[in-house]
Image (cartoon, rainbow, N blue to C red; front, side):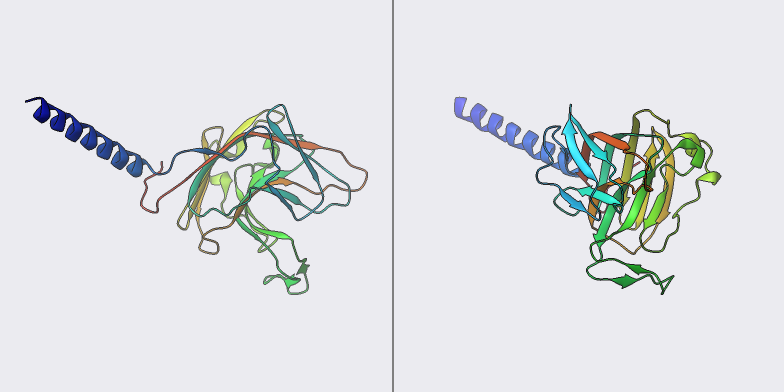
Length: 236
């Protein structure tokens, strides 16, 4: 009798464990902290020479005169994912979050402007905009250093152009899944578009270039986390 009870308990535990694993699989991968609040030693700086450091659990990016747009990037690429972070940007500075991005391996002419070359090492790809609310583009995606276009039109989306709060911490959420890319700023739905150019690439935190005699300005990030998605996972 005791043996039967033991076998039954083992079977029940195994079944519960199996169901739990299935449930976890259905939900997709767990959240991972991209930034531990302490170090960016494994991250890579691309594109320019702006400065990044860690202070009080934040990554702080600081402009440098004559530097090109600069990006601090986690050490690996991502394809389908949900990314969340908080950002606070000096109102005088423009910033952004690169996703599925790459660098030019050599001097490359733009397809839309053959007389304009992009430098080796310059970052290109989808950039979720961080800028003042008056511009109405925060949360939209700019095609950085490539086609020079916006991927969506936020003026057609009530509330989207006013979602960003100047001089405050703003919460960004980005979902890239298959050919569909979406963003939210402070919980407000912003960009939602489809594009097949890039299925994967690196993530980057931008410090924009500044004019001579301007700055230094800063942008701060914290609570940076990501979870990878299955192609068939439903994300609202």
